[in-house]
Structure formats: structure tokens, C-alpha cells
Image (cartoon, rainbow, N blue to C red; front, top):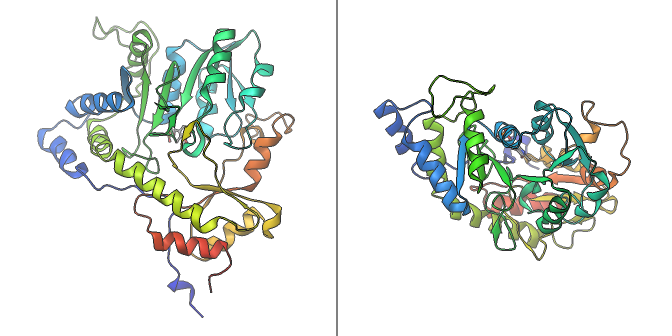
Length: 373
Ligand SMILES: *Cc1c(COP(=O)(O)O)cnc(C)c1O
């Protein structure tokens, strides 16, 4: 019998600062460029735009601010409606609400757990201005039907790609397809800057708008002249220095996440009552969080399974509670949002991070298979 203290502790996520992070940060300190001016911001923005194959990348202080800036750049505000998936991180909904626009919640598609394109048209009204698909946990959204619908009704598409850096939809990177897209570099994301975000677009006008609102609304032609109410959503040079070093290792990070997913798949295939994540034929999953569904047939509920893993030292997270269950966004029922509600009640995020070892994955799988003793 093992004592509690002997159980390994496996976090659900952890950053991997394995490259030039320290060198670049020290460079900021040595040269005195620690605020939101400095060469690393430009270098990080340029490298990010080049990686995605987009024209503009604008760094900012976090992913939520990035979403707010994207919405402001599109002039979305009071009286407008924006459709988002109910199954998302709260930042997607919060950013819409900051602008004064109404949040309209859409159901999920059962295989990918992403916004269901087939259920979108019924939600469109004369007030609808934009759709925000969210590639959840790294699985890209089915963008073609969403963009087709947006074109038909003259709507903008904003991709909240916070969880999908490196994912691909039909050869194109997630975040390079919509009118404007956003990323997050929070500590648990695929690359991190501590706190940070990025707005990307191919549209010159939108990019200029993002920069305007990000820097207090200062007229780029006239210093200390402010034609609009802006925000201070800038990134620091230090954060950008970390981001640049992280981006230099993006291929390594993505490769490792695929290896982790393959190992989990191998070890959990055939476990009665566990549904494994899917990767659709149009998709390259970036496996930000390897996630499973605990079905009735498993014999334990989702929460019991998380408790079991927790007791064995394995940290997990429930899949996001859908926004319609939040008092600030809900309508008080699940009507029309049943698929998302079902996924949310069954889903678990398992540990997924660069330094997770194959032994640890084996260990986690053995707990889930009840073969650990
Ligand atoms: C992480 C995340 C964000 C942004 O988060 P920040 O913590 O503000 O950087 C936005 N949307 C989704 C779906 C996310 O997962």
C-alpha cells in the first residue's frame, strides 16, 4: 500500500521556458527597455504574423483585451448582437458585453464541441453584427459554412483562437481565416508571455483601428490628441521578449502535444464509457488540452472521476461550464443548447503540457482504467 505522499503530483498545465526567454528578458533589463516600447514588441509581432501568414499582428496585454479590441475595431457596440458558442471560456462573452452589444449563445456540434454551423442561421436577426467561432481546446472550427453564412448576411467573423495556436483548418492556420482573430498567451496556453494577447488581421483599416484603441485612442498623426475613447491594452517589451523566445520553439511545442495526444489515445482506446477527442478530416488539432468525455457506461460520474484522479495526484479541469448556466449570460434554461450542456456535464481536461512524460501519461491512463494499484 502506498501512502498519499508517494503519489506523484501532475499539474493540468505548465509553461515550458526552455529557450531564449532569460536571455531576451535580461536584454530588456540591461538596455532599460522594460515598458511598452522596445524592439521585442515589433520582433514578436512580426514573427507571429509571419508564422500565421497574416499581414498584421498587434500585441496586447491579454487575450480578453485582444477580443475587446477586435470588437471595437469592427465598431460593434450597443444595439448590436454577437453570436458566440455557449461552450467557451467566459472571456469570449465578457468582451462582447464590454462593448455594450448583446451576447447570443449558440449550441455545439457533438463531434468537435465547437459552435454548430447548422444551428447558426436561426439565431441571426437584423441586429446581428458578428459571429465568434472558438476552436475549443485546439480543434479548429468548421469555418467554410460559417464564412458562407457571414457573407450571406453581411456579418463579421472574429475567431477567438486563444486555444488553437498552430491548429489548421484545411491547410490554413486557425486565426488566419476570419476577418480578425485573437490569441491569448496566458501561462497555460500553447505559448505564453505570462499575461498577453495578440490581434491578427489582413485588413489595414482594422489593424489601424486596433492600434488606435489599444493606445488610449491617440491619433497616430498627432501625439497627445485623442479622437476616440481608447484603452491602455499594451504589452510590455519584457512580455514580448518572452513571447518571441516561446514562438521560436512553437514547432517543438506542437509536436510534443501531438505525441501526448497519441499516447493518451493509445492508452485509453477501448476503455468502456470514455469518449476520446475527435480530429475531423478537415482539421489538424493543436491539442491545447487533451479532453475526454465520461459517459454513463463508465460507472463513475465526471465529478467522481475527477476526484479519483485528484486523490492520485493528477490535476484535471472540468470542461467549461456553458455560458447559458452563468447568471449574467443565461436565459435560465438549456433550450436549444442541449448538445453543449451534455458535453459540459461529461468533459474533463487531462494534463497536457510540454514536460509531461510518457510515464505520467501511462500513470494517468492506469488510474482511468482502474488498473493502478
Ligand atoms: C484563454 C482564453 C481567452 C483569453 O484569456 P486571457 O486570460 O485574457 O489571456 C479567451 N478566449 C478563450 C477561449 C480562452 O481560452
